[in-house]
Image 1 (cartoon, rainbow, N blue to C red):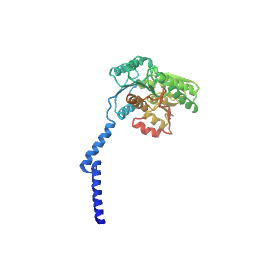
Image 2: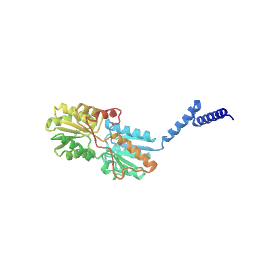
Image 3: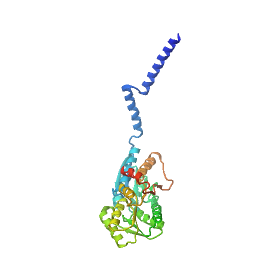
Image 4: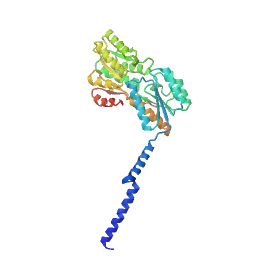
Length: 336
């Protein structure tokens, strides 16, 4: 065979091999589309809906803070391919206990709960544990998480966060602080104010207000307190909606007090940029919704535990003018 004929035969063989390889890989024309769909189906199967239901029961009030927690939980459920049942009690401990009882009756595969009032939900969580339902506490209750039967806690240490905020207020030269408590019976809020007092090292007075259910009354209560005592030169809010009310109250009282807050919202970030709020203590509540769903799914599917007996801390961090612009973009999408 001449070299020319050899080259021709080799070219034909190479062409035949190429066609076979393309066909095997699903390339080209309608066959390519069909095979490509099969490949996509394999990818979908990897994240197909699992037969797992996670219940998250919080004391949330559907406000700017808790809407971010819920969004994090919903995204985690989507990412993990599980079913999420989210309920919140609007700061009603008895209602929260009833919601936990309902989740136990439904035989959910995992339970994530906030615990601002541990005594009120302790009995319900004991029922969950007796039923073999793994529990994770979130947001509040880190110091009693083990007692409640939880495998871990996701949130921030409120006393440590308060100390950090108090130290920062002290560094700004403040002399007297008013700390606004917006929920009765929420031990986490008292821990925040106690931490502020410890970190500040000076006089810190607590003011119990109506709360997020009645912002108008809350605003009036803060304004009246500032009008009655002009010596307050710093106000510490513990919730973004309360911070917005406090900002208005400070102006209405013609007070020179500066303002800081725990927790974020879009309005808080804007106020930081405008100078109405000096800083916010960020506990990254999106993570407090997201991580418990992931952890409970891992526990259910792979017997994994996280934290090594210690809480998984999501804060504290600080948002001020230096990083507010970046955070504002994220807050606008509802994840900060």
